[in-house]
Length: 144
Image (cartoon, rainbow, N blue to C red; front, top):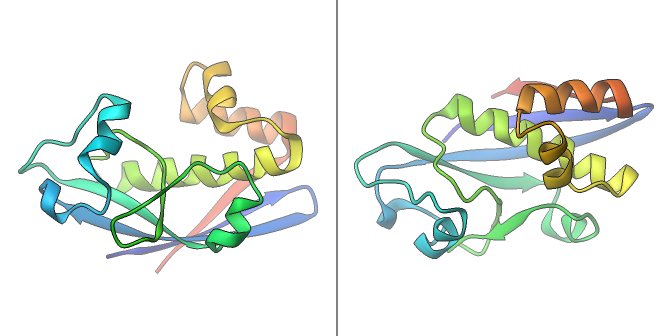
């Protein structure tokens, strides 16, 4: 279970995000219910690797102050709200980076991550460019 540490910078401000990536191969091993994935229209298939991102920091109380997209898992811990298949550690990491930056975008500007993603056609690469160019938000990572 890899731990990912990110620093999101916005101007002179710096925010820390930490997550654990959980790999599963079937619904029984997952922390998020099948119904959660049905909302996104993409239930991970059994026998195929899938990753879920458990948010370790900021804590749930802090996240409640943001319009962060979280979903409580079967273990009662917060997970990144992404109701689609994440087939690899790299894909999960990239969405965690987008989620973390989007959380800060909302905190500082009131712009929701989904609105920002729609504005750039759903492209993470364009999202990161837009965040840097228009809002001075960048993501740095350190993997443990």
